[in-house]
Amino acid sequence: MTKWLLVGALLGLLIVFPSLLAVVVALVAAILGKPVVVAFAAGLLLRPHLPRVRRWAP
Image (tube, one colour):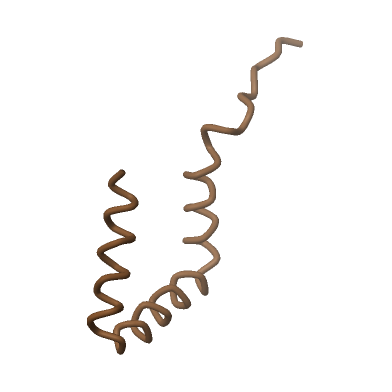
């Protein structure tokens, strides 16, 4: 629910201020240009879906 409110607010701001689109695109490009940030975010998102590694005794 909160995610959709944020998306709606962003779209509303983009409609009111069309020049804001360039700022948003530049911000997204800057974030995606840093592989460490992308890898960290992917790890946070995928963590619940990864299988747990169990220890084994020799």
